[in-house]
Image 1 (tube, helix red, strand yellow):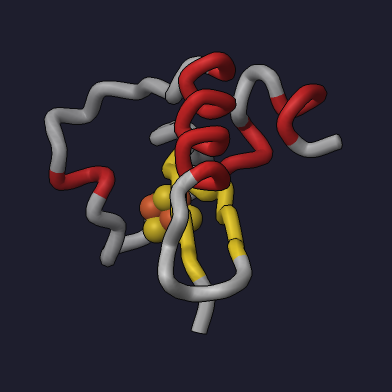
Image 2 (cartoon, helix red, strand yellow):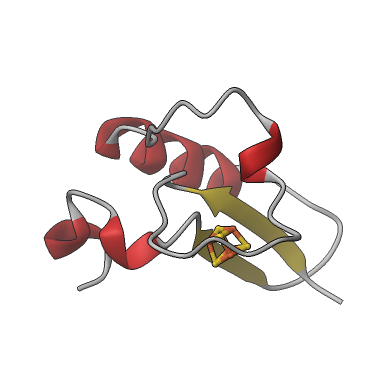
Amino acid sequence: MENWLNLHVTSVCQLNCRQCYFKRYDGRKGEIPLDAIARICEDFLSTDFPLDGYTIILGGGEPLLYSRKDYIFL
Ligand code: SF4
């Protein structure tokens, strides 16, 4: 067991899966600003959780369509 943070960094996606819960919202496309992702990750990593280990998942939507992927996926 370890601590998990699952961030939906963008709602943009080129697919149209029938089970997609993003389509159940009002259809707005958006993404979490890069500075907000950094702050959320810093908060998460500085929290004194009782479990050892950390995993951060950057998902979507399609995370490879995130506008600043040159920064977050390097
Ligand atoms: S976000 Fe995921 S589930 Fe939704 S359409 Fe894209 S690939 Fe499919």
